[in-house]
Length: 618
Image (cartoon, rainbow, N blue to C red):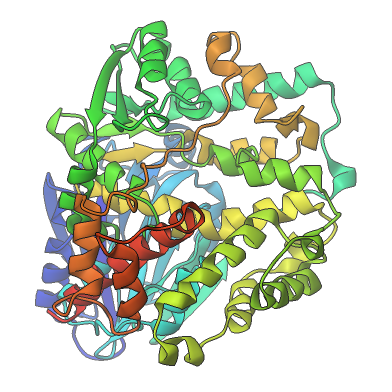
């Protein structure tokens, strides 16, 4: 895992100092080496900071082809690169390193843009083709690795993190339209909190030539229509699934440094640990985050799982005080809004993992998207194609918004109904001017407008269409933002469940192989029952969520939020209404139980925004 930064100017010569400064801002992503390349004519600059994982002695980037007219920088990992390397060598290509990253320059020589169809893994890259005077930038299928870009001073700049772009003088003006959308949990894949900074969406590549950037999708989820589901017997489906999952795990164990595992104690991470531990040739460490509050502590189960697979259990205890202390640093590292303290806990976890000497860890992120693991998926299947939102009690604005969703999709996804209903509360804490400037109907239009619903939702049942929307929005924009939290401490996290080959197997499964008898991830439970005891395989899902803090009015999180949002010296954005915030955070006040679950996430997001806004004014 690394940091990449680069620029291509429309006319003239690139400012080398800008490329150097933007790259240095990403040093935490790659503390082992820094490399630069500038084109002979001076119109292109590429910078790379390296975290040495594969080929540590000779994998310094940027990497040229044999002729030196194609040069690439890569963040992340390409899996199955050994076979591709053999194929390319057979075709006459010569490699100068042992790293996986080098395959991109030779694949591009051989296949052009179609090389993206050969790639698997978590990656973002930039490649300069000097023959065509063209820059190609691309991002992996699910969006595990970030890639941001901006147009500035007659040039296009791109970076693994927003902070690299801000370092060189890109405008820090906030994008209030996107902020409104994100506060309602319905942001867009190509935007950020900053008006001038955009993202390459997942499974897309950008081509920059003659000063023009064109973005193209090279892959999509493509759930099969119901009639095309895989209807083989259960044993065959389970066997294919576990074989593909084991392959995805094994390929992610290839490294020249030790590999460990993030372990929650749930089915997903326990399965990865059970598959990986016998294959690794070392005693794996299982890093577990625990919270002191009852109901949020899974450490007993996680410890038993680690003992079962003979891994070393490492417990990282996270308190509310620590979440408050690391809040600002975590937000600035993550560059996104967090609705719960779990994001800050992930940041704390990665700091501890780094201090232990670990550089690479497996994580179960993405399994819930792959296998319909969220509670909303069970509810969706139970009411499959029979929307009943009209029977539920909703405010008039919520009902109108849900009616709009139903007209677009023909049904209302359960997860979307819940979020729209809950996020209506956010308007109570925003200024009247801000609320009047935007509308949830426009938010929904922007949200659905970024997807090809005709090709990706039509003919699918409501469970598949619902999973599609979540996997294309919440997964990359929220869950996978953990990349920046991990890489803030130079920890590379690998995600076996987000292998597109595994997804191609899972997406064809009939619904009863995903959810059966009200229990999610049925195929995974069946697949790993020979590896894990029944008390793991049959255990209900418990989300990784930090304990609530709003009722602890004199606690560290409430004090932090008062400092950020409700007092006269607060760092707010001027879009919030401080009166209701102050009332909710009043140490002598009392918050009804119904409000705690809805208001606390809103205050968290506004607190994140206050931190980002304070940075933008520096």
